[in-house]
Image (cartoon, rainbow, N blue to C red):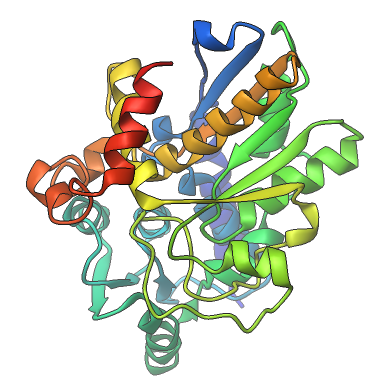
Length: 349
């Protein structure tokens, strides 16, 4: 192991972190919920444009300090796009070859971003194939399979050290309701929900964690049944979240409630929120918003006051040719009565 290079690599990643300011906490004023304050932690402002920038940084540090990556180690990752964009960025920072194994359906904008950072895209027919193909490539190239779906929950220090949970609670300290009643998020690897849930318990907060799962994902069913062998042959239509199998990084014990969100509602909420903010957000942020509005409605009916914090996971600019393209939507959901009804429902808020 080249310890001098490892020391250099860690210092490069730490320097990059020091150069990056924390992401903003944006309040969404909704007079309908006058006693409930809603906030979005805007993760789209990271250098690589998404929540996954934090994960990629943690995964590289974890692999470096475990001795899994050296100065000539090819790095391979299975991804639905955003993690691969961020990992390509850090691989370029360290001068390493990076290969992303993704489904052919991945948004073209993400593929272009991976290639912009010097990464290579290895496309497979279906999301379920990305795991075995990543393992095969790593073995063939004598590389390291980063495996975000296994290591996401353990690569981040959930006790503090500027993780996303610590930053949320710090940024909320001067607000009307500084300790959130609920934190709402959607799982991709399960690493962020594990970090937030563990941090809440470690710090002794009364906040609760609601995890919202897209339609074609097994996380919600696993949470309800405890069956870790669940599988779904259809990949999630909400890119970046939901999985066809139970991932090792998904920790159900830190979650207070889960909600299954129809894809049509996620996309309707994405479009509505983009109008409220004056800029485009990604579809997983729409999924988060559905959970936020449902929880806020429950609090209002119970005459409870408080705050709800969720994540703005990435920018909608990555999805111009998919979710924001009317023809693309019409081929999937625009004829869906649930989509139209939900869009009308939230438009009245």
